[in-house]
Figure (cartoon, rainbow over the protein chains, first blue to last red):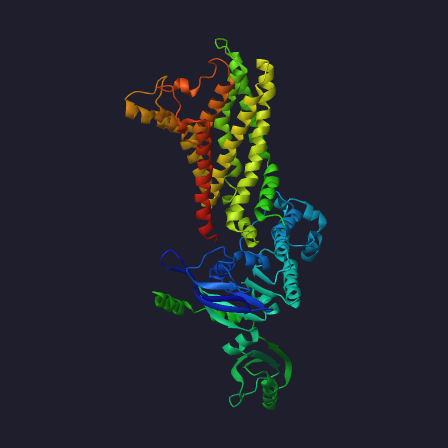
Length: 314
Length: 283
């Protein structure tokens, strides 16, 4: 059974504004799934439909086998949620918030245990939430999401507003949750974290899914290999990389030769060839493309494609 | 397990009880009502009594209880939608219907306690000023005022459920207060003028009495009048029968029909607000 199964989801506002357009996506049980896209891509709208905050124009969503719109209670009993743009109750303390969530979820959690998991002190938990910093608020909200040992965690932009320490805590939490065999589905436009923890990634742009794959798979699909940079005493006259499979580009800047390789095993051959040309290699560095670059590649020029799809709807 | 609506109601109560503004309004309600109850004794031309003091207290309560209830509840749902806490709440198992029910019950309980507490100030004032307290009349007045307050809480929660922002909830609440509390009688009089060619005098026809009583405040006024007239001796509080042309009170002007009017005012806006909320996109 899929943790989340999104089938032909479209959400249209007004006559022709598509927040999400004919989206198909399946998140398997037990995987950490990253949902990526620039602001306004439709990530939150998709999650809002998954959580039944927003009703779809067409298409359907099932969560853990339950219909997201018709069986909302069954879904919410089993899912932990950190919504986008959420708020809390200023006059209630952190501990009261957790107790409220525990009561409403009919769960057996100990608030102290949850506080410890998200790193909130007992003093902080006794204070009204109106005086919390953004980081403390976010921790408490994540604590609420963890109530009732959910099988699936849905986190919409879990790192927004957090300091680097908080960001790391969120990442650790995602890892731990995943290690316990649970499914984690989270959206982000901060890519480094997604890269660090996700089994698979979907990239959404302008309401369309543009890619779903593993991070490695995305790299391979785009063919943007890693770059080997060789600093040499003198650049050889001849760089005969043309005959070498797995090399996709060469540039020379001052005393550095940059070679882009799509096959990691040719790196050795590249170094040998440079040496054969008569140069002494002083330094070697290699660089993997970041997800950031992949992301820009995917989302940079989709306007035409999106327009076509909207035409297709009419 | 406690039902979700009961958990929500309890949290609403605990939360609202901590609002200083709410208690300030309740204190103003109690003080103004108590002063009004005593004021009649200061007018030398009138031979005042404790029951008449309660009539004045009721006149004051029917203006103030609605606004107190509206203030206590107009943000019940719209405020949560604006702050985004509704997403946390609805991300937990409760349905939107359970949220609306819990809100009405929790805030209704707060306003019931607040209004009853405020009116308790009236009892010693009447006792001291008029030398006695008609207990049945006073208890009835408290009960009817609590009902009026809870009806306005239900109206306010309905408005709150139907709107997504504080400002729209406030605008609708003010419009409602103006229409239902302040302007209703005036509109009724103009209607009478249009039909009969004169303003209503001492004696009024039954249809006009009904028109006056169809607002929640009018129904409260008619029900308290029926209660206090039945408990007072002589003509201190004129009964409806004495005001009506023909002198016979039809069924649709009886005190229990006034309770039906109040119940309808509580239920209809609440259901409409719920229906709108249940279909809303909470983006």
